[in-house]
Every structure is written in C-alpha cells, then in structure tokens.
Image 1 (cartoon, one colour):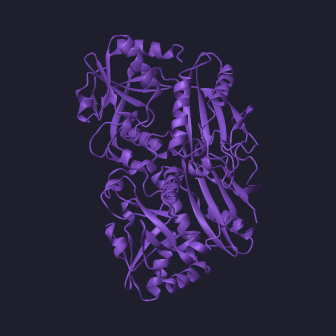
Image 2 (image 1 turned 45 degrees about the vertical axis):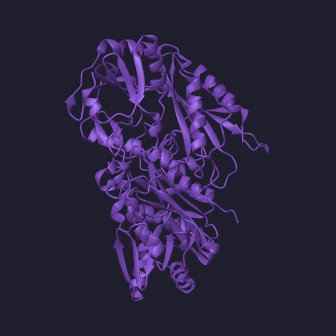
Length: 294
Length: 294
C-alpha cells in the first residue's frame, strides 16, 4: 500500500508578527512538486519536525508532540507555532488515514531564503512494519555522540534538545550501526554517559525500576517514553530520570528503544553481547502503546 | 536585482549503479514548486552542498568545489557525483549570470524518501553585497563547537568535514553572534582549539607567516583558504596548517575569515577586544580573490 499525501499550510498574508498560517490548507499528492529550491529546509536543514504515530486513524499523543514542536521552535528562534492550527491539520490528516498504523509528520521550515514567512506542511503515509523489531528486538551498537554530558546546557547554539531537520548525523549513525551488523545505535556522550538512540529514547529496567537518561543533557524528551513511564507508574512500577554511565546498559535486566512509530523495541544485543528480552512485558507495553492515547 | 533561477538535474532512468544524472537539465524559476515534500533534503537535511562564487560570469575554483563535493558524498555514503556533469551544469548556470558577483549553489540530496535516485539541482542568484565586511571587517565571538579536537577522527558518523545540508547549527551560531552584538562567530573545540567560522575558514597572520587550523580536525577544507594560501606563497609568504589554541587569535597580528562569497573579511574584534586590520593587504588579497580563478 503506497498511499501518501500532504497538507500544505497556507501562510497568512498579514502583518501579524507571528507570521501565522491560515485556517485552510491544500491537500496534495506527496510526490508532486510542492517546495521551491529556495526552501531553507532543503538548503540548510533549517526547521523542525515531529513524527506522530497514527493507529486506526487516531493520532497518538498529539498534545505532547505539539508541545515539543513549540519547544523546538523556541530553541531554533522560529516563529512560535500556532498550536490550534497545527492540531486542526493533524486531525484532518488523520481522518484521511486508513485502518492500521500510519505516520503523520509535521514540518515547520524557516521558509524561503530571503522570504518573510515560514513554510509548513504535514505528510501522511503508511508506517513501516515494526513487527520484527517489537517481537525479536534490535541489536544495537553504542556510538560516541561527540559531546560531553554538560555541553548542551553550556552551548544552546548547538540546538541539542530541538528536533531539527538537520538530521544527517542521526541517519549516518543508523548507517554505521548497519555497517557493524546491528539494527540501531545508542548515542553515548564523550565522557561515557548513555544518551538516546538516533530516532528513539532509551529505557532500562532493573528489577521493578525503570530509568531513562535525564533529558536535560541535550536529549529529546521522548513523547513515547513519557507516555510509557506514566503507564508503568499506573502499573505500580518505579520510574526515574538519571544520568546513566554506559556500563548501566550491560547491567540492566532489560532495555528498550522506544519511539512513536516502532514503539517499544527490546534491545537484544549491545555491541555484540546479548541482553535478555522480557517478551511478556514488551508485548503488554506495545499493546498499551497501540491503544488510543492523547 | 532579484534574478534567481535553478537547473534541476534529471536522473538517468537506467540500471547504472552510480544512479547518474542525464546530460540535460531543466532551467526553472527558483520560486516555482520543484521539490516534493518527500525530499530527504527538506525532511532531514540529508544531502550535501557547495557555494561557488561567480565574478562577471566566471565560476571561481570550480575544480576545488567539485573535489570537496566528491569528498562530502564519500563521507555521507552518497552516490559519487559525476564530476563532468556537475561541471557542465555549473558552466551553464554561470553563463546565465549577469556581470558582478553571483552565487551558484550545488545541492545533492539523498533523494526521495523510499526513492531510488538522488536529487540534484544548481541554483544561481546575486551574491550579497560584502563591501562593508571586506573593508571595515567583522566583529566575531568565539563559540564552543562542543567537540574535542580529536573527535572527528574517532567518530566519522558525526560527518564532521562534510559540507552537509544539516546546517541548522551553523545558522544558530550566526544568530548567537548577532545576539551578542557581533557579526560572525569562530567555533572553538571543547578543549580550546580554534576551528573555523560557521560559513568560513580562519586565517591568522604573525609577521610574514600565515596559519590556518589543521583541516583534519573536522574542519572543512576551505576552497578560498587554499586558493589564498597559494597566492600568499607566490608572494613569498610562509603558510602553514597548525593546531592552534584559542589564545593564538588575540596574539595574531591580523586575522581573516575567508569564504567563497564574502571572500576575505578581516576580523576587527574578537569577543569585544579590537584586533588590528591590515587594510592594504586585505584589499590586495580581495583583488586577487575577485580575479578569475580556476
């Protein structure tokens, strides 16, 4: 099934300093030419995005994604997104998604080179099949992210903590993982602390306690991780944010990479060493993540 | 004068594993829709680029830019650019540029999401007026790039040394410089070594000796810096690549940020402290940089 479409948000041709979009948008085929070559998204990766999982037409965690979009815009000095308009576009896109799992992407670009308005669009497409990763897990390698754990706080111009369109390093890390015979990567700081996957958050379990690296350290605060921690707390587990040394990974009873589309993928192997998979908990967690969540 | 156009390179619909482009390209208005929303350049900054200065219709240092495009493609695991085709596109674009200074950008994107071919285009537009920066100089601030000097060699997946479309941090550094009342920035490594500007190379002069930071440390090897070093050597000056501590900047007799469009901009101030400008040398150097160079 190769359906794909996009909604292009129309800039409001007003003097509104927020450079807002109108309440209408144009639905287009995702393969037709829509962006000019002057787009700063295409020229410089200068913009931000969110990927929202859609299950049977229901967009998951819309509010959390929109909150992160607002935060990314703030870090990148972009016009503050008009949240109700984005929400309207998400609802419109989700209503056009068929049954099953889909993905809606929100993209807010700085706009045209020398232009006055940001550019914004929403795409919708089938989600990739994540069954194997959810059931059999993923083999990961740890990769140095190059930064010390205290760098993001000290150097906000590095945009760590914003979900920017400058995503080439994240993609390169996934290629490096595959080159090493693995499926995915976990970034570690140059001073030896666990950070996150290139497109996911890391969660470790030790007994009945679940921990994830402190998002302050330039890590994206994962919407799926937050949703899952709330569910684990409801089930009576302890959850915590911590600064975790790399050695914590091998010592964990289990670990997951969690993200909006693949959901909870158990870590089956770290740098060639096997890690136990808790198949029962993983299945129940993914059942929760596939249920409608707001 | 607001002329702008683009040449879109047509992918060769063949089984050629190099996924080449045909020898024809389409000339379009730069403002018309040309790229689909599925473009990985726009979605993930996943591609590479070069900016070539054009003076009176002559593209400067075409070979050096194409060599760097090839190197960036290699670092990013992109299809190796077919250099003669790119050269042909540059010649065609330059022939359409009016007298004065223009800029040609080469963009090679990984292509469409789930697509089989890269996407490539060349844009041409008037160069910004750099007279003030060339004559009166630029005030700079030093900004931590977050990496230690030895990181790039150890972590090639960080793509340091490739000129990628994931350029949001470079743009954020320029905004941070302006926020601090300066015009530009010089990145320094987390362990205190000089690197480069967000869009330029750094050259320091001590007496008759010119030095620039060693490009091995994840620094882009600047085409303008290389061209200028050759010219300085012809004039009998000593030139060298060195690992330079941040303190070398304040101690220098003079410093320049050099790049393809602005050319040699003398550094007038570093973090609020004045630096001497060698107006005569700067003028003669820019005269050289504005002469036809291959």
